[in-house]
Length: 420
Ligand SMILES: Cc1ncc(COP(=O)(O)O)c(C=O)c1O
Image 1 (cartoon, rainbow, N blue to C red):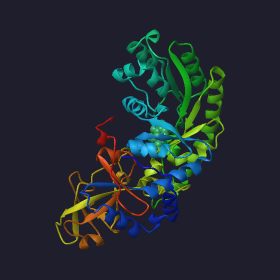
Image 2: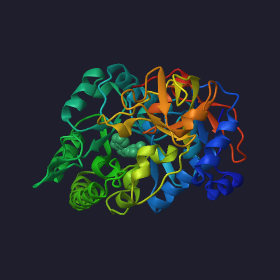
Image 3: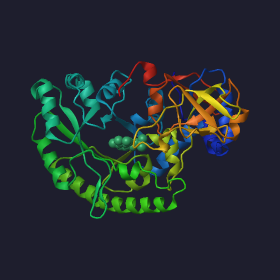
């Protein structure tokens, strides 16, 4: 089953922004999927359409490469790639990239965002001219190139497309390391050196640079109830952004002095407008902003529509003022903190038991609404992040502009794929 996000009816529904009235929004999703057994994951197509269009508006005309780890459904990837403003996939694993790219209807431009040492997958890539023309691997160390050479010697393989991962963390004189610990290629000189190294090796073509500023794109700058922390975060992000803009421009100029590049990728949902404004960047990456998970409610510069929610069933009541859900512990990755838990959104006014939180097989909820919940009722929640929820289900139920449940679409898991 596939679907299209381009119909006028969808756009019209998207502009009505039904999610601004959460009670009606979640109730209509609830009614639409009433016949589906829980746990059920629903995807509002008007909300997805709104989010997809808002991301392109924020990108200001430069193409968006879809971060597939934040989507994990082939049908959704295809629908989004069918929209103007989207081009190519930023995949998270090489086997995933090969799976997406293979065959006549395969995606013709897939960049794997992280280095791979999967020898079997590298062998598949290197022995297929077709896959090697569609898939780009990520490099930040000559050792990764050596490993590919060990798998298939350069004279026995297709030329492989490679991309340099430029580290975007900020080495702040005052605050220390701000950002993630990924690539060792930080300085423009290091990027130039690695580009020259790749150019001097047989069997590789350097086609791009990826420079992802996690400390700006992935960190909310308006944390709930903490205005001072938000102000500090915005100041740090501004300072880090200025440092990066200069360094990224110099690194790209130096790399372009070695070889022509097809693309320079940067950013993520949280930084689209800021990253797109840099002249050195030719495309931005984004994925989470499509589903609109609740961590992205806390950014100053943009809003997301909650396109994905999941419904869990009440299976028992330990007391009149508590309702216990079947399942619930779909905690998001990252630094372990309360904001990584799913957020109960409907009926309004439910909260976790502090000592239990979101449980593996069952989750007791309390709060005013718990009193009126009965065995067999359903509660709706939003995941903290975008893609991980899709590892828990085989299908997603799309909800149409007319609030109808459409035929379920598959997640990666539903297609028998488990990449990570
Ligand atoms: C390399 C890279 N680019 C972009 C993103 C942004 O993805 P999203 O839009 O889902 O936040 C990520 C997320 O971790 C990433 O690792």
